[in-house]
Image (cartoon, rainbow over all chains, first blue to last red; front, side):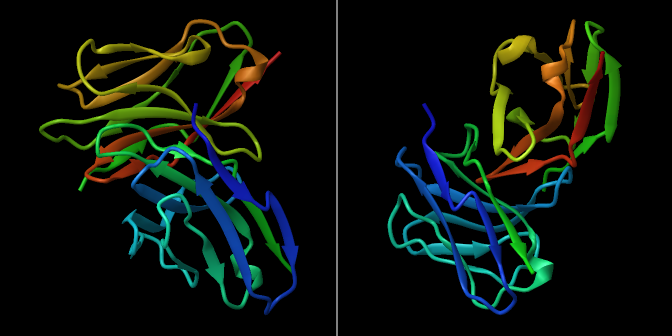
Amino acid sequence: EADIYQTPRYLVIGTGKKITLECSQTMGHDKMYWYQQDPGMELHLIHYSYGVNSTEKGDLSSESTVSRIRTEHFPLTLESARPSHTSQYLCASRQGGMGEQFFGPGTRLTVL
Amino acid sequence: AQSVTQLDSQVPVFEEAPVELRCNYSSSVSVYLFWYVQYPNQGLQLLLKYLSGSTLVKGINGFEAEFNKSQTSFHLRKPSVHISDTAEYFCAVSDGNKLVFGAGTILRVKS
């Protein structure tokens, strides 16, 4: 059973606010990922981590930042939200280099 | 680096008809391949995966896929679709520590 959680599920916020999207997994996976996805569109990798204290930027440039202080936790932060940040954000985790990624339910962010 | 091409952005089909969603990947010595499904406002759920062994892979919800090394393809099939299969489907290939995803195919099942 894959257990990966994202909170909040939906967030509507005003321009300029600081937000943190939470992602936690209980599977002990070493690798974690953040994707940005507009409705019905492709996934864009924006951040990933191969373990504690390891973070890398993904293929799509993003103004967000991430941290990996604990294996199970991989939060994403936007210091100053803008309408262009409106999107769905998906968190995923994976163990090793062969198996599948497990995805959380996503956070749908709307910045007014 | 690996790449994935999903040849159809949308596939309309009538209920109880068969369907094939096409996926091609760039060649590599060894590949691990995946199909995911995404329902509206949800994350991605694994349908099936090919790691090694039999080239015909069976997954959940009656879906199956065939790994074809010579054609570098991994097409997804279902012999009879239901309205509930309406969703977006993503093909992915393992590239080191990451998965590379295709652009997705929206399957629309009509009654």
